[in-house]
Length: 355
Image (cartoon, rainbow, N blue to C red; front, side, top):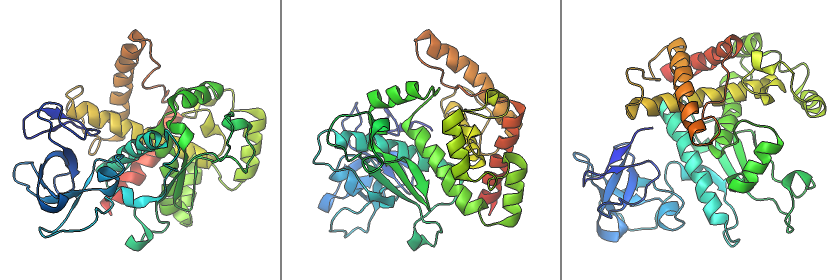
């Protein structure tokens, strides 16, 4: 991720909606692929303030009305209508009940994490789309809250009350509770996770989407997958899940897996590894554009160089976090078997981008 510039010269960031220096509204301009200052025009339209662009824009409906987005949509000069959904918000099938206090704020946190996910996918050139775009499976998102009316721990609820974060046939469902900072930290400690973040959930679940799109049903791709991650058909997922929750992860998981959860089943190993790859790309891209670590572009670098730079950055960033009493920013131990799995994901991403 890089920073951006308002037309007044001030630095602005991916999350911003207003320049703190000049007060101008900001929005993501699709032609510029950047956060830009918005100059008001007729009929609730705006003109992009980036030099050489000048695109006619309207704010996404979820920006103008719901205040949970900051992206814009290109429109004709004579546009006069309702604000449409932007290129990212159009993938939402279900949003939280906004009549419930606090839900809008938590939805906004989910949307920010989703925008960061899709930004990284766009950066890598990875394919995704809706059914109308010809994609199978079509990508969509459900953001839902548990249906219980009494305050209870989510893991003690009955199945009929609980929303399960997960992926099925292109639909990514995120439990709104994951956007509650206190509840998410309680869950992280309960499950003894190094990290539990909203963007981490998105990166994990999108991996299942790409398994379905790029690997599942392709004999050669599945054979290559099994060679690296193991046989996903034996034991089947239900059997592996039952064993994992009965016995826990393998004691020696760190020698071959990126996380304890990755030991459950090859599909989860792939998802955890894919999410780690997206973490690495995002961190290295940010370090490059922020001047922290120059001369390595994760879009063109070879994997060994990416891993080495990520590990070196991790040492520094972890020590900085520890100096502030925070958890490690880069908790993963990238043992050789993990790097081999990352190489599979790296090749998959590069190959599909070339297509």
